[in-house]
Length: 136
Image (tube, rainbow, N blue to C red; front, side, top):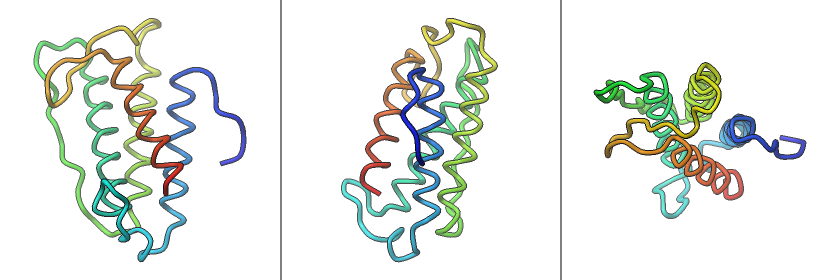
């Protein structure tokens, strides 16, 4: 993607998701299946990211619920679908964040390992997205 990184976390998140999805879509099957330490492959790195984005979207959508959301597993389908999985899961997260009231970055959300600060989850996702964007 061309352009500068946006300053706001939600805008940066959207930008990074689009950039990683575009890079994954552009890779050949051989490149997607090639190792990318610490992941078994670029494909698996993308699927792991898509799962984390989907989990975060479910948690944000659940809001301040006392119970964790229903976690859904990202399916392993066609190798070329991994870019789309990142894009769709990322889209869901960006839109779930946009639907929250102002100042919601400081709220706690559910993760698979318990409740965490939303801002921390977003920062970790941004770091993973940046790492993958630079190494894909």
